[in-house]
Length: 269
Ligand code: BT5
Image (cartoon, rainbow, N blue to C red):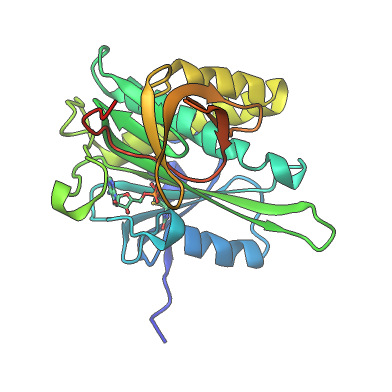
């Protein structure tokens, strides 16, 4: 049995002026994955807006069993939510998190930093991935949403070399952030998450979608989307009402709900 992962008892009050009312913090030095810890906490009854933070992950996860490279110095959090919405609306939270992360990253970088949201779950700076989001959820026997975990990784001090990843990466430090103190990054992220969660509740997905589209990577331009088999190619037309990607190819409009926008290749057209 691995040794138990012990939370530190200090987080919100000692972590650089975090607003203690917005989220209930549980901080760790090292975990396997903050999403995995959050799942265990959900099973033990953790409440809405519990936020798990770890300084290191030994088994950070992306989607589809991919690895999230997680050295010390970057930010790893998982937010537990218990939203009272139909289960099909949970995917909106990927976009809520993306606009919150993009806002936070933009606030920490020079004014002209090109911060973009890449469908479905990435934030880019200058075309390089600075953050990823991993949404996991559980549905009760009667079909309602039991919990959603929004896992967020932000490269603060370091990013993986090109040889280890599919999409080029960057970090706040590499992109020119004046300060890369983790507590400051976390504080900014919490402020923007709080804001966008409220917007989603008050104004619905339309408001989140509009903010996401205003920062969308490659909107109106040719993209290739990997979703099993040959990539789907066409012009990125935006998001549907539920976050589905809309792409216009030679054979008309297609909607894709699961996949990855691939790195730009030299055009074959
Ligand atoms: C993601 O998956 O981008 C979601 C990443 C979520 C990570 C957070 S950290 C806190 C919480 N706890 C977890 O265990 N996970 C969440 P995906 O779109 O599948 O992208 C994964 C791919 O990104 C990998 O296959 C690599 O190619 C690349 N990658 C891995 N580590 C990276 C990093 N630190 N920076 C940039 N790209 C990375």
